[in-house]
Every structure is written in structure tokens, then in C-alpha cells.
Length: 618
Image 1 (cartoon, rainbow, N blue to C red):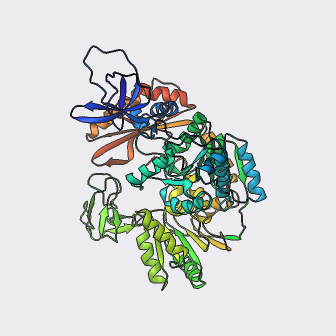
Image 2: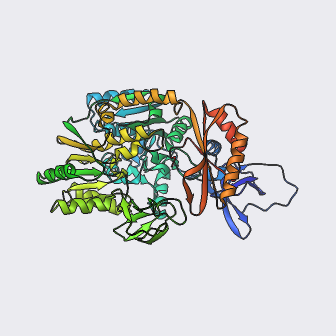
Image 3: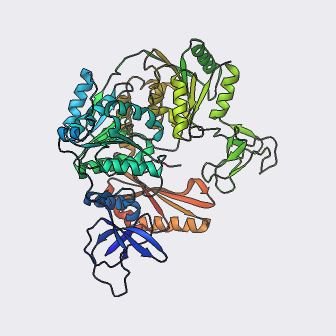
């Protein structure tokens, strides 16, 4: 039997078995002095060398569809089959296969699901989605997309089917769990990386018993072993968090579409700011108006720091007993120390990036390799004292606002402060109860939380995002403006304060994100970027800089043989060194995926890593 070790980089191995084993069976095998889990790939001719015996056959197995999808993921995203199949959780043999009808579920005490009452506009969108195998639900913020998802899930329950609901980050799960449980009770389970192993085992048992029919969570929820899958919803489908940054470098949105095709499930992608690619590729169902329309006024101001207009607006809103939100493009005290005399930034000794200043913890930290050191005051290049710090981070923003507005309670909302599910729930509870008055944070603020009493949104740093070396920089900046602005004005009239030195660019798209998408698609077609071309990024990292450079040039040389593939550029990566490894990259483009995949498979070797359809270029 040929088997593939799970969670291993080892090649496929051959073992013998006294019994005929089905492809996909999970078995245990001896390997040197240990016992490993493996999946059966299939029968092979008995080799000339001696083979060890398979120790046992577990009660778990991977389905034909899971094996096929893992094969696709490994080939398309350039990982081993083991890495790809290990994303999936196997099924238990003979486990519950679902309920054929409502009465059977009711007899077993299963919740039947309560569908919310939809408005005429929502009902129309719901009916359209029922007619499509896959579609993009393009709904402005506050238009009631969640009620449509819930109605679709209730419909699946009626038909004896299960649903998967994907969110880009676990920071969204507390509010969504609350909403889903109102309609579906204990038929819902949340699934993400912060859940303990014991809790996951309990959830899997309840899935096998047919008690859990809806699984909601981050990327990994897509691979939970649900029977009778009828629906996959990918909420905030534009979010880059759906793209894995370690092997397999899959995109959960694209794998969800593949899974829907393989398993005959409906796929609904949804966003208020959909990606240009999804808008171009899929049928669009639109929700053009918010459920409750409130007036929203936009004001544009210059600058790149917390200035008098921002402080005045926050002060007035606080005095009026309303809540505010302030967005910064960086996390924590994510700013750098630099020398006024020679202009050099204080770098990590192991990575070619600035050490981030964390004033609260009184240290410098590298956000790439996690090296930490005490705050320094002298330039390591020229000896000048003192060093200055560049760009404001959340902690400093809190200090500036706190000292300017007496009595204001500020909730820090970023990945440095919200480190556990408990801290997230506590922060949201304080803000919802009115105990805190200002929600101040980074990208996490844009992720779809509902804050009914926010009447002022302050958006900083859009020019920084607009200036990134990324063909999607414009899309990211405009989408972020819409997402942050959408967090305010849910229940009351609101004001949005936008700090930018390029107000005319943003003003032209304020009233309809679709106008921006259509303009951007014209630009992308002219520039030949996705969705009008396929791109890939090759990454090379080595402790020896000369060796890394040689691998890069050798790879470029081999790629030149493929005429349909354009080498857009190659050289040192934007961050040249991480964890003491020198980094180079090669960016490739082709009119379609086929010639690009062909070229990449021809040059693939152990010394390079391939990121297909990359979303990160820095």
C-alpha cells in the first residue's frame, strides 16, 4: 500500500497490509522508533525491498472529494499532498449521514431554524441567490446581508442540509455567534484556531451525531467534516486574511468555490467592498440601500497625525455623549526609531526591517522574527543622540487623546491588545454598554462589527496605504474608507472625518463603490493584472546571500524558456532579510493560469517557494 504521512514533508511510503484498504483510509504506521498517522493513497505492486506492516486502521477516512480537492490544492498552490490533505478533517466511518427531512430532525430534538423577516429588497436578493450555484452578494454596509445568510441557512436546514459560514478573522466570531444562536440555537458551532483541542473534539462528535448543522469561523472552518453540505457563505470575501501565508498558500475564497462545485453546494460570496476579481468573475446580486438609512457627512482634512481638527471633533462628540471610532493604519506602537543626522532607521540585527517601538512594554520588537531588545537612544551607524520616532501608533494616539480630552475612556482595538477571545468579548461589552467612548485601533476595526452608537469615524493613514508598492493599493485604500465609514451611522446621523492630502481622489467615489470598481477594472485591464492576467511570486531565502542570489538567477534563466510567461521583475525582496536569511523574489505574469502553472512546475525545486495568486508583496 502506498501511504502519505499526515502533517509531514516526507515522500510517500510503501507498507504492506493483510487486508484490502480503501483509498483515503487513515492508518497508523511504524516509522523508525515512532508511530505515525497516514492516509492510504492506493495499492501498488509489491516492491523488491522489504516493507513494514501497517499497524492499524482507524475509524477515520477521507472522502473521494477531499482527496481530489487536496490533490488540486497541492498542485495549484505548490505544496506537498500531505500539507494539503492535512488541511481537511477526515470523516468517521459509519457516522451519522444527516437527516432526510424536517420531521426526522424534530424527532431527534434538532432545532428547525427560524428565518428572519426580510424586507422587500432583501427578499428579492434572497430569491436571486436561490437561483444561482455561486454568486457575489454586493451589499452596502448595513443593508442586511447577514439576515439573507441566515435565511439561506434556515432553508438548508429545511432541506436536511448543512452550512459553512466563513469570516476573515476570529475577531468577528463573538457577535456572529450571538446572532446565529438566536436563530439556530445549539445547531451552530464556532470553529477557529483559538478553540481548545478538547472543545474541537466535542464539536466533531456533535457534528457526527447530526446535532451541529452550521459551522461558522475562520479559514479552517471550511475543512470541517460536515455531511450533506448545501451552502458555503464567504463573508467579507475581499479580505486578504482568507489567503494563507504559509504552505499550502491557498485562498479560502477560491477553495470554497471549488468545494461548492465538488460537493454540489451553493456558494455565496459577500461584501460591501467586493474585490475587483470577484465582481468580474461571478454573477452579482446587489443590495443598494442600507436597511435603515441615516445621513452621513464626510469632511476631509490635511495632515498625517492627530491634529487640532481631529481632537476638536472627538471632544465635541464626547461632550454630546456619543461614541467615536478612530482608525490608524499601524498596530500597537508600530513605529520606528530613526536618526536625524544620518537618516538611518534602527534595524533588527537579524532582519532588514526597523525595530517597532512598543512604549507600553518599554521595548523594541521585530514583527518578523520577534527579536526583542531594550529601547535604544543612540544611532548604531553614526552615534548621534537622541533617536526620533516616526509615525504615530495606537498607544501614542491613546496618550495624545487621553491628555487632550479629560475623562474620555479609550478602547484599544488591535492585535497587540486583543490577544484572546475573552479580551475581545470584554472590550466589545465595555463599548456596547457605553463604559468606553472611543474605539481606537487598526485593521481590526474594518472587519464587520456592528456599533449602533458611533456617530463619528476618524480615518487616518489612507495616503500611506495608497502609496504601497502593490497593484491593489488604490483598491485597498478606497475599500478601507468605505469599511471604516460603514461602522458609523448605523442608528444615528454620523460624521466621517478623513485625513488625506489627496481628497479629490476619494471624493469621486464616496457615493458608490461600484463606480470605483468599474474604473479600477479598466485600469487593471490596461495594466494586465488580475483578473485579466495570472500572477505568481517566487520566494527564495537562504542564510548565504550569494547562494540566494544564484538560485534567483538560475530560476530566472530557466523561466526564460517559457515564452508565454513574463518575468515582471526579480531581485532582493522589499524586506531583504528575515531571521538571518537573505530574501529574493521573482514576480511572474501570464495571460492565463495554464502556461504559468506549466512553467512553475517545470522549475519547481526545494530551494524556492511559490505563492500562486499572491496578495502580499512586501
